[in-house]
Length: 419
Image 1: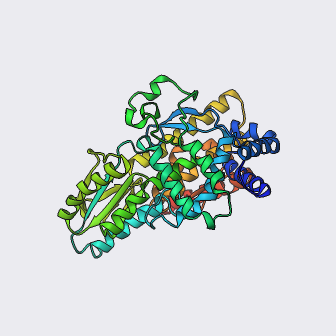
Image 2 (image 1 turned 90 degrees about the vertical axis):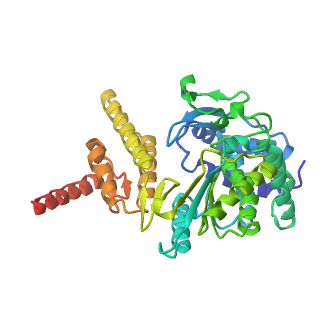
Image 3 (image 1 turned 135 degrees about the vertical axis):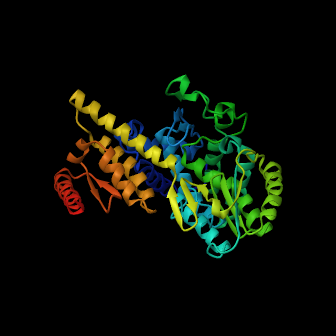
């Protein structure tokens, strides 16, 4: 059906499979696919090539970490297709994105966004010697408000623009993207959890209330990429039409720094009108923050204040809850007389090291040490060890006993010296 090199498509599909299983290899969906992965990939290849690809049922559940969110997790075979699309189209969109959009981009992310905002404030205030103000805005129910037709048209125009420079079949990729963008994940989805899990979740944050041809599922790789694509025109409007120098965006949270408070007030109606007219989006009326830089600002899990950056209390609380979860998990394992499996080890390290990796970006050595030594169960130290100044956990059992013995002796020595 499509004009494409069969060998290239098959190779790219295998690469997408290896990308999709990274950090997901121990999940039930991934393991089922991996048992006969060559057969499954060849079947998927035939479906795509013939134009008969169909999206499988999604799993819907509520995540409470760090806040209450509705997640639609695609079947593993669909995640392979998501990675195939991402690998094809992401390089072209990267050419169009502004420097200061941070979500789902290589060498960007939350830590980079925090550092950039700190840099904006320092530069605009001439290192805190002159007045400057911070405007922080948010889009109401962003992912649930994305219009499918507007999004697909933006993607189509971009891929057609780069058609001659692409080494893949643009029509095939557009066919797959159309399938994904206009697919309704709520149809025949598998709901996990209790009805009470949805209690307190606003309708503006649920796909079940999004309306026809509206909304993208949180949890898919393509949704993260397409979320950036949808607001890319807004980024260019702010940077080049309004001429604003200090501007950054992470998904639907965006900040502007300027020395003129009246000017920042004056552009709020312009941004509201642009979002409504061009993107059918609504500026959240209760999430408009405009303050002098000396008051500080919360952004992407950090509190940015003059001369210092703190981890927000909510992030500390989330880390503490995660530690308590794993403490209870290990206690239950010991009660039942079962072992801490390889899958449990990978999940534990991924969970702990994600928090430690973020926290080590800032002056949090004492906090990291306290959280691990005082809150994490002592039973963990038979299997895991701390490295790099409390910034990472490792899992070699023999080395763990040696390293933690050294750490304990050092801690005792420090206390004796103080006394």
